[in-house]
Image (tube, rainbow, N blue to C red):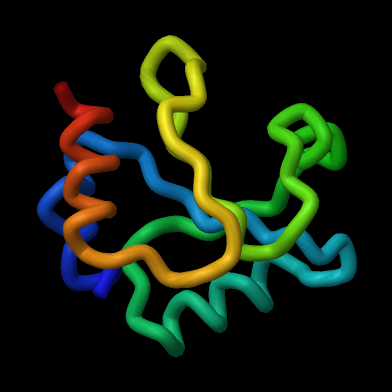
Length: 93
């Protein structure tokens, strides 16, 4: 669902999947991205990133606006298409 929706916003929203496993390489993440057909980039996090954003579980989703303010957060689970539309639309407004 997100891989079908994201292309509508890719020119206006920077979206990254960030690996949490310190033992996973960027090439492993990239291989997974390609195998799933995802169009957004993968990244490895600086070790300080997760505590500073209070990320304690996998699959945490955070929207940060152009001013660095967290505008949306969700934990584990798949968000529906309408939720992602609202999140992306709020970021480009």
